[in-house]
Length: 132
Length: 132
DNA sequence: TGAGACATGAGAATGATTATTTTATGATAC
DNA sequence: GTATCATAAAATAATCATTCTCATGTCTCA
Image 1 (cartoon, protein in one colour):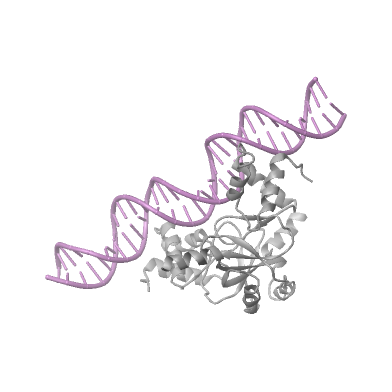
Image 2 (tube, chains in turn blue, red, yellow, green):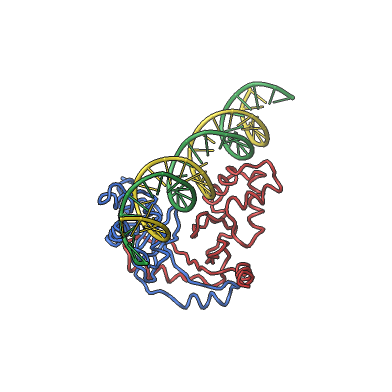
C-alpha cells in the first residue's frame, strides 16, 4: 500500500468532505486553502495513484474533465448538462445488465456504469431567472 | 437545416461506413484519403455542427477523446479499456431507469446512457500473445 | 548517520479541442 | 455574365486539461 503523506491525506479528506464529485482543479483549489504551496501536478499524480490503489474512484464521465469520488462502492451518477456538476443517483445497481450484454458481444466485459444527464437544481433556478 | 457540402457529405459517409465509433482525428485520417486537402478543424467544426442538428450523435464516453456515431437512435456502448475502441451493445434500452432515477434526485432528468467497459477481441488476442 | 527510495513543486511539454484569420466558393441580384 | 454578399474551408494560433521532467527535499532502515 502507498505511503500516506500529508498531501495525500489532505487530498483524501477534502474529497471525502463533498458529496458532488470534483475535478482535479476544483480539488486543487480546495486543498490549497490548507496547503497553499501544493502543486497541481501533485494533486493529479496522487489522485491517479489513489485510484490505482482502490482508495478512491476515478469517474470517466462525459464532459471534458475527469472527476473523482471518495466512495468506492459501485453506484450510478447524474451529470448536469449546463454546469457539468456530477452527483450520485441512489438507485440499485443492475448486475444483470452485464450478463445480458455478455451474450451480445465478443468483448470480455469488466463492468458497467450508468450516467444520467439532466439539469441540476441550481441551474433550474438560474434558468427561471433568465427567462424573466 | 445545414447545407450539405462535399466535405460534410464525405465526413458523414465515412462515419456511416464503420461500425466502431471513431474519434475526430481517426475520422480525419479516413476522410483525408478522399479529400487530401481537408483540415482537421473542418472535421471538428462539421462534426459539432452535425451533432447539433441531430444528424449524428456525439458520444461523451469515457477516455480522453470524444467519439461520433452515425446512428442517432438510442443505444448502449462498450469501450475497450486497453485501446479505447467503442462498439455498440445490442441490448434493449431500459426507459424505466429514467423513471426510477427521477424519484431519487432533484435534477430534471433529460436522458441516460449505459457504458460497459471490457476488453475487445483484438486486445484479448494481443494479451494471449504477450503472455507467451 | 547516510545511501537509496520515494515524493514534491515548478514549470515545460503534449494532446485534444476551439477560435481566429484569411482565402475560396457558391448563390443571388442586377 | 459580373458584382456583391454570405457561408465554408484551410491554415494557424490559442486554450485547456493532463502528463512529464527534473532538481530538490524528505523518509526509511540498515
